[in-house]
Amino acid sequence: MANPSPQTEASTPPRHVAIIMDGNGRWAKARGLPRIAGHQRGAESVRRTVEAAGELGIDFLTLYAFSSENWKRPPAEVGDLMGLLRLYLRRELARLHQNDVRIRFIGDRDRLAKDIVDLIEEAEDTTRGNGGLTLVIALNYGAHAEILRATRALAEEVRAGRLASEDIDEDVFARQLHTTGVPDPDLVIRTSGEQRLSNFLLWQAAYAELVFMDTLWPDFTKDSLREAIHEFHRRERRYGAT
Ligand code: FPP
Image (cartoon, rainbow, N blue to C red; front, side):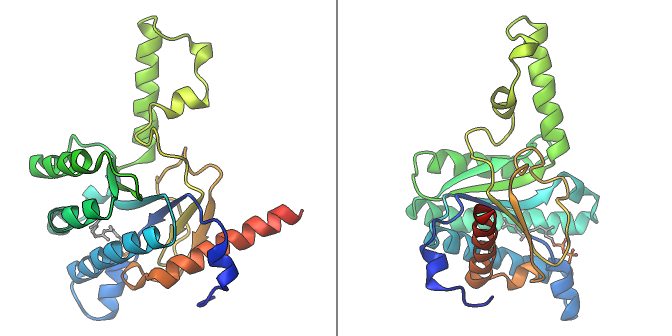
């Protein structure tokens, strides 16, 4: 639905929305443009969506910017994606900070270039005290790796005698994940018509509503986000009635 009723917007927004941004390549291909053009337009959608999320009263927005599987893409495209991320962080940090946005990164930093790790740390340190929207950027993120890392850390605690295995419950486990301190997503959106989670937030999205949209990521607007939230509320109301 393109124009959700005012009633929808008045409902409490989902606290945490996570997005698998997909379809940049197809957007470019449909226009006879190189894939980088799709990623560039995708970065503009990121800017728009962060602004829209704040305006719609969302507290946490997680964006899947680069998966651990994305390294398999041609080196030139990996370079382009990292370049866009650099540009985004350099250009947007001051404005995001001004708008009280807190930035966090999840994913494995080991394989990232030193200057990107520096930018990530700068963004996190600068915005640590902000109380508005929390923007979580998943970069070199994979849920399997995240869960294995948490398991190893807990196994080490048990081996060292600092933790009893029977004390490992969901809270103890979740505290070892990259997302510690971030509530689980209420709504996961994937654009471009694909209907998979692709190793994204597998632990955290256990109870999330999944909304798949045909819109390609570069075409995603504030109205697209409203539409997904509308669907989220529609499902909530339906379950409430049974
Ligand atoms: C999927 O499109 C999208 C990505 C691989 C990553 C998303 C990256 C951006 C939006 C650009 C920069 C990010 C930030 C945070 C500034 P695809 O290439 O898989 O599309 P396709 O499936 O149509 O080929």
